[in-house]
Length: 116
Length: 113
Image (tube, rainbow over all chains, first blue to last red; front, side):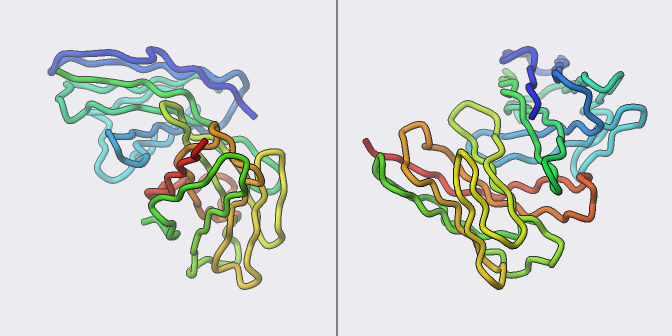
């Protein structure tokens, strides 16, 4: 298993500003993921971040809007840039851990972002 | 993109068993069946996974149909803490963990006291 913490847990930001969300894991992991969960919706993957390489973004998400850093095997950041009210969501990071023959993902508690 | 079908919602009474169904008629031979759940105001948590045989762990049991086209997550005695959205997800075991999790809408379980 893995224990994940995120900072901040919540924030209220003005449109046009940027917010950087931090994700810390208690063990070294290769793959980290960033998800968005809009109000009342399911989770949508934003990007996959491997240490030592550029993040891989899903369709509809771009690096200029959601730059990601992955400086080491226990830490990652996601920045939400030039925010608009449509960016109001919960942002979650997760990591992949091998559990037997399959892989399990463990999620952080999320960062609740409100853009006014 | 979700390759599974689940009921939108289900209700149960506390201390009764709950059977959460999932249909995955297009499952391939290398797909594992994973279940995650998301408690209110929390990130999703892993529940259980299986390939062909039924699986048990401290949280739940997973019953997989012989043709693997459907599965059922079983909570043996529901508690109020089990009220959550339950997601059934297929993952290709040959991808070495690199295949993303695709979350559908899941089943919202309500547990009545």
